[in-house]
Amino acid sequence: MAKISICIPAYKQPECLRRALESVLTQTYKNFEVIITDDSPDDAVGKVAAEFGQHVNLKYYKNKTRKGPPENWNEAVRLASGEYIKILHHDDWFSDDNSLAEFVDVLDQNPMADFAFCPSLNCGADGKMRYVNTASETQIKMLHADPSVLFQGNFIGAPSATIYRRQVDQEFDPRLKWLVDIYFYIRMLSNKREFVYIRRPLVCVSLESSGKVTDECFGNKRVEVFEYLYIYTKLSIDNSLNYQRCKVIWALFDRYNVQYAQEILDCGVDFVLPQEVDEILLFRRFSKRVGRRFASAGMAVYYIYLKLTHFKL
Image: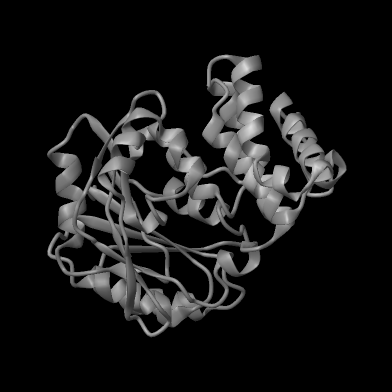
C-alpha cells in the first residue's frame, strides 16, 4: 500500500491538470498513489489522466453526476488508501522535485502531529510567482493557542499547502465553499491536535485559473454572510464569546451594509444565531443614527458593552 495518497479533485482545465501531474511525476519520493476524482462534463480530464497512468500509480474516477466543491474533494479522500493525505488541487503543482519527500518527512519525524502545512508560492495565470503566502511567527503561536484565530484570516492557505494523517478521518463541510478550508483547519486542529509548520514553500498555488471557486464567491454577499455566520455559530457553541470573532462579523456587516435580521435570512441562513449577532446589528443601527463620528467608534463602544455584560472575552 502506498504511504501517501495525492488526492487531486479535478474540474475541467486539462492543461492545468497536466502541469500538476508533471510535477508529481518528477518527485524524488515514489511511495505514493494518485487519486483523481473528475467532476467535469466531458472526458478531457480523463484523457490526461490516462496518459500519466502509464507512468505513475494513478487511479481515475469519473463522477456520475457533478458533486461540486467540496464534495469532490471529499470523494478523492474517501477513495484514498495511503497513511497520509496530500490534497493537490488540479490547478496547483509542487514547487520542486523534493516537495513530496519533505511533506512526508515532516510527519514521519513528528509522530505526535496529525497535520502540517507550508508557505505557498502564489502564481498568476502565466505560472510566474506573484507573492509568497507565509505565516508569521506570531500567527503560528496564536494558532497553537487557539485554532479559531483562522476565522480572522486564513494564513495557512489553500489545501494544496497541507498534509495530514488519514486516521484523522475528517471531511470538508459540504455546506461551505468559500470558507470551507478555514473551517476544516479549525476543526482539524481542535482538541489540542499538534501541527508542524514547514518553513520552505513546497507548492505553487494558482491565483487566476478561470472557473475557480473564487470567481463565484468573492464579493458575493449571500455566500459570505451565510458562511461567516455559519462558522461563527459553530465556534460559539464550542468556545466562549470572543471579541476578535465579533469584530469579523461587524466588519462583514459593514462591508455589505447589513442592518437587519431579514437581510441575514435573505442570505439563506437557516440556523439559530448567537445573541451577540442581534446585538451587533442593534449597535450598528444605533451608531449610524447618532452620527458618522460615532459610527466609526461603534465597535469600540460595543466592546465596552461586551466587557460589562459578558465579563470574559
